[in-house]
Amino acid sequence: MITQTKGNKVAGILGSIIGMFIIFTPFHLAPVCQKLIELKSGNMTHMRCHYTGQAEIYFGILIVIVSLMVLFSHGVARRYLGFLLAVLGVMVILMPTDWGIGVCMSPMECHTTAKYLYGFGGVLTLVGLALGLMKGPFSDKP
Image 1 (cartoon, helix red, strand yellow):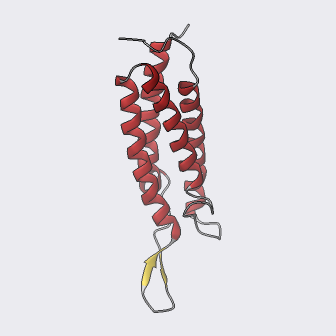
Image 2 (cartoon, helix red, strand yellow; image 1 turned 180 degrees about the horizontal axis):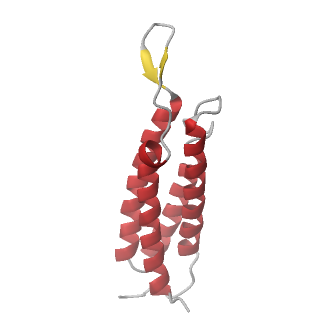
Image 3 (cartoon, rainbow, N blue to C red; image 1 turned 45 degrees about the vertical axis):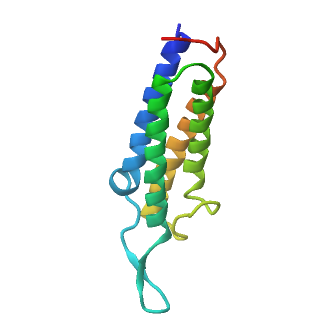
């Protein structure tokens, strides 16, 4: 049986691992498109998926920080951090969609990146909700 303290440690470590995967997904694990597009003005710029990848890296860094805070927090603060992880998981899911920055319209490499991010964001959301909804005393001291 997993006790509340062990569950919190598992959630913090799992959140950190997922955050690291989110950091490395857009440019290493499943890279976004590397091509540039030409604007009407003649200037060259990255496609939307590049900027989505950059945003996901920042979300991944926040997720790692919050997950480490979960490991060293107690009581109600730990539950609130769990809900924050769930919100960050939803943000990771929304970023590659049209509600976020998005990815390329035609099927390209970035669509694979988005699938990975949907999976990581979904797992993180479930971990955060489980941590936030965990019953137990609010004064659990180490």
